[in-house]
Length: 243
Ligand code: NAP
Image (cartoon, rainbow, N blue to C red; front, side, top):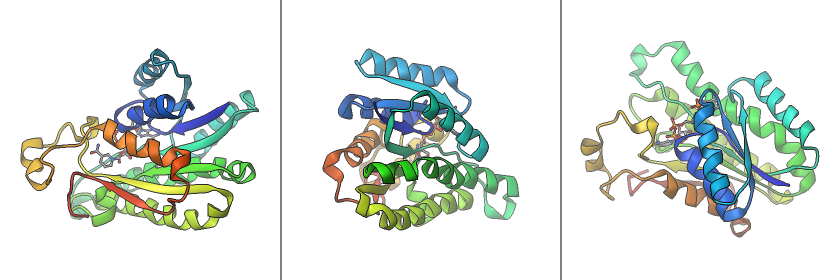
């Protein structure tokens, strides 16, 4: 059984990626969530309705012990399953000017993006190396590429993952494992629901927010056999915002 794991696959961009990897590439999809089990079940129902297969798997990517426990239990229950694709998509924001930022706002946001990348990716790395095939795709952000005022924590977390992407890509390229980052601009999800879209589109040349399916299409290509010579890249998908 060839599998793809999408962290934060229950809602938003992650849900669209789960659905796309099942439909386009035929993967058995592991839909990770932290708290929203009902949303994860909805994602699974959409995959099954389209003729695909998957399962939900709850764990907090920021928590190393919880992540290892859940993934080890899954691997033990599925000894022949091969994880070919890992999409590190789970992410949170805790915005505010740095002068007022609390340590907790910093550790929470870097914990999910950066430690999440480590906790999940390191679990599968040796197995992928032995299997001589893999696709690791990290969902970062325009904020990690250019830096965004009011998001010092989030910009640092995403920039950190971009650095990790470039370095890991060089370590594992010989074994047919690619490591890439996808950097969305403003995408319509729960994360951006509170933003003033009318005002913000003025700075987007495409004059609109993107949608999760557009990001998922890019991820699906990077996850495919066709993208084997692309590695260490950060691909912007932002409607033309300078980045
Ligand atoms: P979203 O709608 O808020 O969904 C976040 C997802 O991450 C949910 O499935 C959530 O699951 C999961 N999650 C959060 N913390 C987690 C944790 N500690 N462990 C496991 N899962 C966790 O977000 P989104 O807009 O789809 O964003 C997805 C990714 O794209 C994030 O990395 C975000 O930074 C990035 N991004 C988004 C935009 C945008 O405009 N939307 C732009 C650039 C980059 P629960 O509900 O169970 O917590």
